[in-house]
Image (cartoon, rainbow, N blue to C red; front, top):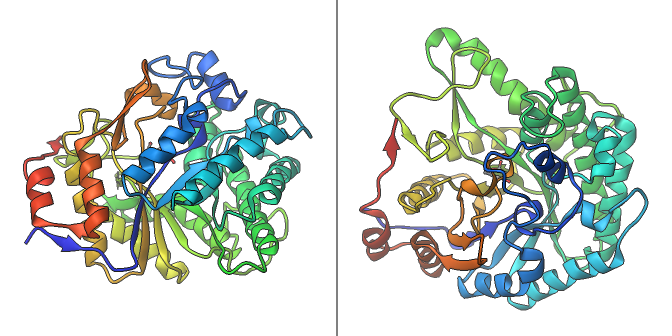
Length: 424
Ligand code: BGC
């Protein structure tokens, strides 16, 4: 049978990030990278979905789609445009947006850091220097003081490994460095930021009924291309996600992570937040792709079983409920996204792990970092010229899953049956 049900207390939502949807003129590492001509299709982050001005219509669209949980960001550089300056109008704007969502029955999961820094902070060396973390923590404090009473769920840091490796190891994001040591300085400093925010939020909300804090851990499956690559595969996995997971979850610091701030061992997440997209097929120190596999439009392998495989590994480190804080795919013509959603949710529904939430990446087609507007991940189509939003077939499929808490035979036949992946 192709139909399946999700567990009773399982919630489905969507995710976004402020820099990718808001537009406007915040001075960030991304506005700078654009100025340097480093965005593939040369589109500017000042456009995106103009969500900063259209958040009301977008919130109503979420409601219309039946979405009850929504992961969203806030732009550090807007709130804190220069060192020591915090803009009270901007934080009021975000508070209004959050209040609107809550009044519509949508529970926000707020991300504090999602790949974007104010340019003034970049000029100081961003997270490569431990003396700079205080600036991030001041910003976090300001946010919690202003919305901590109405927001119960938080992601402190999004994908520390992706942010640090793209910016400091592979050199494909601002500032374009290629330096192993710097990469781990950044991840180590971010682990401290996460743990401090964890404590700060819990301290602020100690009299509230429920508080959920974690970070979004980007985890991949690592498989060896041949048995002789087993050792290098283990090492790659450890360097990419293993070492950092133990530091962020438990304050256990092992090479190459550094405990610059003498963090004590403890338990620093209330749930396991997972961003899952793909698998690395290893035959050396470079990332590889398994041949003859389904691919998305960015040539990432589509590997649904991986969503449970990565979750098992993290659950071994710490026993917490699992929230998939991102999963989705780049499908520019929406021709296999429903199949992708179906297969990943099916894996989850068949697993005995305590999966509790799933945030589809993304709500709207948006500005996909160095790919610009050219890579579409949304279940809602966006016309970047007119800013018209249109629910895609995969969006209607997702709405149907939410309504029925699972995939019915009718929905399967209507949305999934005729979809196929490209195999490469
Ligand atoms: C990021 C998102 C991004 C998505 C698709 C994740 O790494 O958190 O911001 O758009 O992947 O590339």
